[in-house]
Length: 366
Ligand code: HEC
Image 1 (cartoon, rainbow, N blue to C red):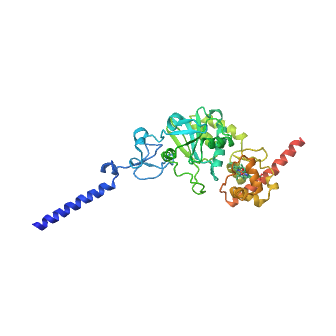
Image 2: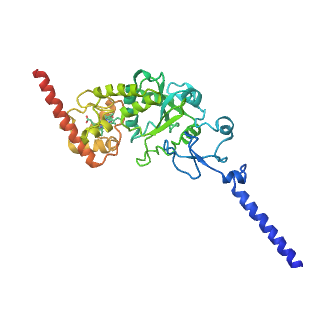
C-alpha cells in the first residue's frame, strides 16, 4: 500500500516536471496552441503562408515567422507590428529628418538599396547603374518615383559623407541617401528581408539587391541592382501602371544609349560592368574616358587595375594614385570578373578604340 503511494507520488512529480520542461521551451506569452500554428509569411505578400521557412514564390524575399514575440520590440508590436515598413526616423544627406513609412514609402513607387560608401566591391557599380536608371526615368523621378539608398554603416556614413557620395555620382532629384540609428536601420533591413546583404568588404558576402515596388498597389519585387538598366527602368514604370507606354519610351532610350544586348561578350561585359562609369571615346563619366587606354598603359597594369584597383592604390602605384585623386576619389571598384572576362574586356577596349579612330577619320574625310 505504502509502496504504491510512493510510486504515485513519483509519477506525479515526473508529470509536473515534464510539463514544466515543455513550458520552459515555449517563449513567454505564446500559448501552446499558438506555438503549434506558427507560420511563415512574406513581409510583402501576407497571403503567402507556409509551415516551413523558405522564400516567397512571388518576390523571393525570406519568409518571416508569423509570431516571434522574443524578437520584436514592444514599440514595434504596438505601432507597426503588421507593416513591413517600420516608421523609424532617418536623416537625409541634407540633414533633414524623415519618417521611413510616412514620408518615404506611403503611396509611392520606390526603389530601395542598401549601401555603404567605403564599399570596394559592387556598390559603386550599383550606384552608377542606378544613376543610369534614374536618367531613363526622366522627370518622373521625384514626382512619382523615388530612390532611396540607406547606409548600413551609419557610424561612418553621416549626412555629410552621404552628400559627398551622391554628388560624386551626379545623382539627380528624387533620390535620397539616408542614415539613422544603427538599430533602426537593422530593423528596416530585417523587415524588408535585405538583411542577408552586404557584409563588410567581403566579396562573397555581397549580394547586390534592390527592392522596387508600389506601396499603393502592394506589388513588390526584388532585383539585382546590376540588372540591365533599361529592363529595370521598364519594370519601375510598369509598377506605376505605364505598360505599353513605358515600353515605347524605353525603346526610344535604347537607340540613343547603348544598343540592345549583344551576343558579343566584350560589348556585353563593358555595357553591364563598365559603361555606367566609363565611355570609350565619348568623354569622362564618373571615371575616365577609356579611349586609347590600351596603348598608353601596359597590359599587366590594366589587368591589375581591373582586378584589384584598391591594391594598386594601397601600394601607392603612381598612376593609380593620380587617377584616384583626379576622379574625386571615387573608387574604381573591384568587380570580381573572371580572368577570361578581364582579357575579353581589355581586347574590347582595344578594338573599340580602333573602331572609334576609323569612324573619326571617315568623318573628317567626308
Ligand atoms: C563605379 C564606377 C566604375 C566602374 C563600374 C568601372 N570603373 Fe574603371 N574607373 C573608375 C574610376 C573612378 C577610375 C579612376 C581611378 C580611380 O578613381 O580609382 C577608373 C579607372 C579605370 C582605368 C584606368 C584608366 C587610365 O587612364 O589608366 C581603367 C583601365 C578602367 N577604369 C577600366 C574599367 C573597366 C574595364 C571596367 C569594367 C569592367 C570599369 N573600369 C568599371 C570607375 C569605374
